[in-house]
Amino acid sequence: MNSIKEKAAHFLKLISETKIEEAFELYVSKNFIHHNPYFKADAQSLQKAMKEDAKANPEKELKILRSLEDEDLVAVHSYVKQYPDDNGFVLVHFFKFSEDRIIELWDLGQKIPDQSINEIGML
Image (cartoon, rainbow, N blue to C red; front, side, top):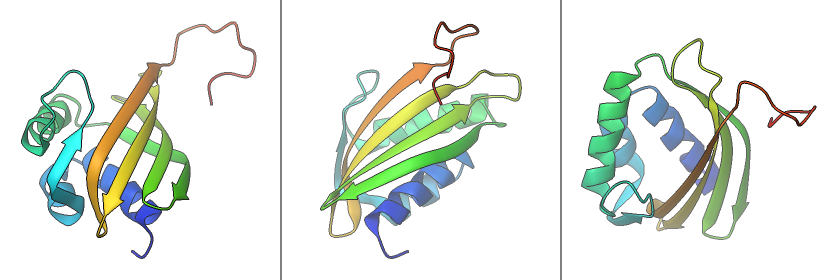
């Protein structure tokens, strides 16, 4: 993997495949912080939450729709289903890299509703 965009995508792929420890070992800096409001800001708290989610949703699927790289920042727009019949949700992750490792992470998500007024949908 050469670009940080590829590293961000591979990190998310490993997470979705329940390879959380491998993802963190390969890509996360020891000085990592994140901005998810539901967990403490350290890597260990997020990693623990990801492991619990992986255990609860072993059939999770992730599809990366698009990604952008700008200097030390990467944005990844993706579609995730927790289980086969799930409508899923749309996620956007923002990664900040330093020395080829993730040092900061922001994530935003929106559930796909059963019915939408928007005729072209969210994706």
